[in-house]
Length: 472
Ligand code: LAC
Ligand code: ZN
Image (cartoon, rainbow, N blue to C red; front, side, top):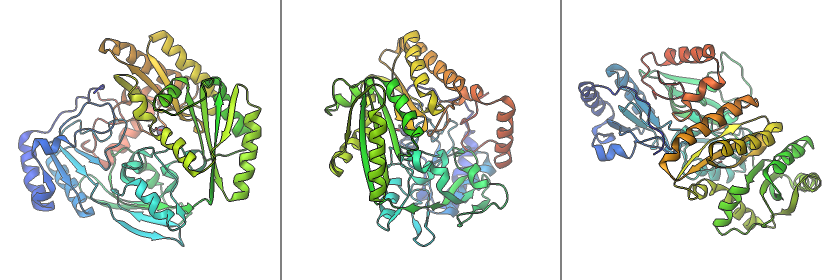
């Protein structure tokens, strides 16, 4: 593990004992885990944050269980860390203050699939990839597609406002959340939002909860907007001499008025990792763009033609090819989805970021990453959702002695991102790993207003403590 959990005080043993008894009564002893081995499996997520074993895990199976847990926790002043799939990348599900992990994975019913109103009502433990398959059988489409879609759950996707490659055309999770049922610290249950496409009643509380990283409330039901499933998809692969040329081509494509559903970039080192997986890629290529368009067949054909024209004129183009069939498309995407584990194998340690810059500044960000690498001696590789300006910059190292240089590289990346008009995170959230950098992007006044909101929902700062805001 690479990042120490922040030091947030743990609750006293006496309070834990009382809370345990109360929880066993209210949710049932079989749903409360207290043995350290059982608890330890709930101590980490897919980030590099050091694991912390909670004192208890509640396996909620109903909204009542969630509300009861939050009531008991408030009464006994026990910290609570909500958890769905546990696939988060910034430590959001790591229970840094111990206390209770409130697991919602078993709250996994699909309550309604409504074709006419094009919506679905689900519980937080529904696996995102399973939701995709379910609605697509009905001719409907839920676009957000985090790369962990086989394991991640809707509750966590909403908590982090997850993105994925298709966000370029379709937007991130927030664009699809119509309404929520949320349990607050203390056990109050709220319904926010609506089932209609339009609606502006009151403050947009749904939007506030989306992306709040489990710090304001715990979702027990989620109403998601759906769209029609696109009839056809086509994938085009463009190879470039270098990443800056590929970055410039992103701007060319968007300026041509094209809105591909995905426009993914991989730099030279990333291609090295892909080749190491046994995927043959033209040796002349020092960068790759993967573009995908969708729609009815006439639209897809027209977009592929336009993409071809635009990319053929791009500087530094080495080769252009269209995926010939679904199998080839599948292989391209399997490679893309495997990038995170594949790049992890390139070194003993890897830290992966998800910064976003205005799209016109992608070439500049890539230059700055090279400069950071040169100045600090830390290896870097970059890939990601270039169409959104959302790039996964990864720092790799083998020797613990390099760690101070890595911290320096990370800090420089965050500063440079903000300097070119960007933002620290596009889809993984601030969590633990980026909390220290929040003041680089946001003023102390803005942070204070957000902390005031947090206290309105959670006056004793018990819900997912140690996340988003720097720990004092
Ligand atoms: C990806 C994840 C890490 O895009 O966000 O691969
Ligand atoms: Zn991503």
